[in-house]
Image 1 (cartoon, helix red, strand yellow):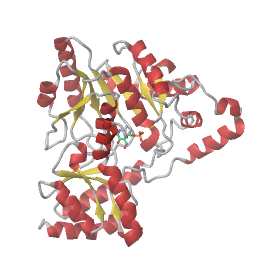
Image 2 (cartoon, protein in one colour; image 1 turned 135 degrees about the vertical axis):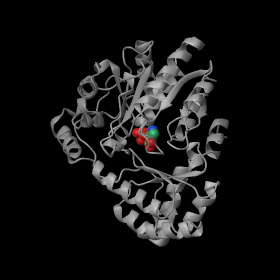
Image 3 (spheres, helix red, strand yellow; image 1 turned 90 degrees about the vertical axis):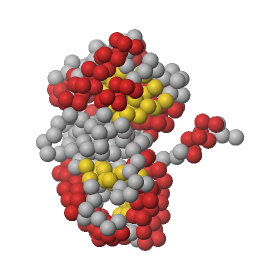
Image 4 (cartoon, rainbow, N blue to C red; image 1 turned 45 degrees about the vertical axis):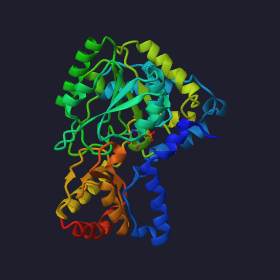
Length: 395
Ligand code: PLP
């Protein structure tokens, strides 16, 4: 007797998670070293030593009633102030603690934003390919996802398609740059045009459209690339950040949401987001984790580690004849399937113990995603398997 909604969700259950389970089963059968699992975006570098030190010091030094107690649903004021100050220093913004709400990762952040702004039947626009869970998060609030096509050369969004898809029902757009699954960073020119279109359409349809910037890969960029803070382009921007990838803490579930004062109805948004944090059952972000990340805001993940993997995988696959989009950030490689139906290609890969995720899971068939947050040995050893796969498709 489960609900109709969950029945539906079970049918469409995450392809990535299913692959994760399959990978574990294959590793048991063939030995982990003989399975090349590129399915999951689980960081492959340890959390910075400073994070463990912070946890130990906090536990040793802080009154446990304070450290493990309830606080405001938006999180500890000193932690939120430290994050606001850090953002101001890096991006020239003018936030203070009240603009920041601590969240249970990016997923928790997106759900509390959605709960705050969405009514049933509202539409949220996403640029394909996109992180597939957006579908479920929107479904939680009976809202619909509307997909905008990419430019297949650059994987920047097709902005004519974007403009055409904005309707009276449009409440928000999600932008995820650096992007999962393509690794592409949206160009400043693209962001400027997106902002222009949003401004124009807001006036036409007579209500605000929020831009939700989902940015767990903000610091994971290569070749000196930088990612702008998107509030600079468009005032109705709400930022969702996570420490899952930047500090390798995905299991700890910690992140934050920023609502700038210039956003329409900012005070209501902030209060709504705080209430939603409580009523969705998160109550507040984990207390110890809040305090620990506040001490690690200057810490960085080992970008050079991912960069080496990126080069090895991109060059290796390109040499074998595969067509790949060169990632500018995040830790994913987006590869064109040699056959239109990429599920066939994913199945063929399994024969050689290669685990790839089908592009349709990201709303863009004909491609596969490889997560290169793995050991360099996995990439090195996988090359003979990719060579067999290339030979099978006569590349
Ligand atoms: N958004 C994107 C684009 C992601 O890639 C992920 C995780 O992979 C999330 C959100 C969820 O992140 P978190 O683990 O912080 O909830």
